[in-house]
Length: 185
Image 1 (cartoon, rainbow, N blue to C red):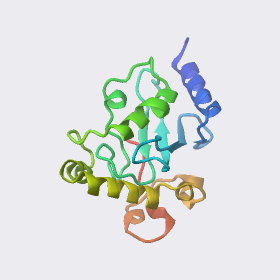
Image 2: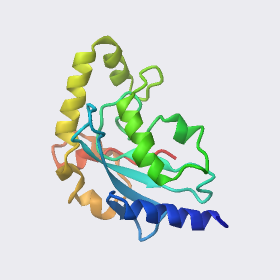
Image 3: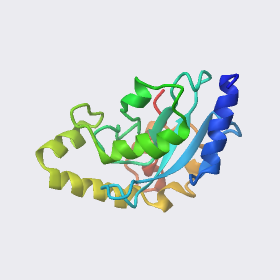
Image 4: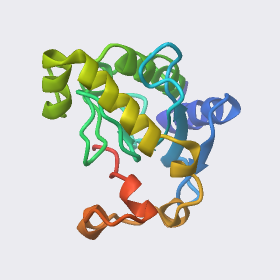
């Protein structure tokens, strides 16, 4: 590849041509949302999440920012911000990886093999280590409540994706409370 921008364009196009639904933000290709389905044979199977992706100018030499926009109960995902604790994205990213790796390998492995010893969600990590059955029940409960197709399609936040204020987290029972936050820088 002759430049990071050509590589970025190619990686985004590969993602768009794959089985993933990609929604660009502000008509650009540096910020977009991807519809992500929980991996088969996992507690998250059947769940659907909207993942916010932000590509830095130095992509692929610098990792993308990845975050869940609707809630997920997982030891390595911050419940409020949706940011992900994943070494391959946060510390050991390589230009050999591309966006398809994130959605076909890294995120499915994160959901299949949570690491409670390095948590972003202490409650999930603690519950996973102390009471596996209750942890699994809570994961399924979150999937049922927040990770359905209707939770990520057609809400007012889908159109604008403006900054989310603290008021959106006030516990009101409208559809905005399923939108959790933005990707971690």
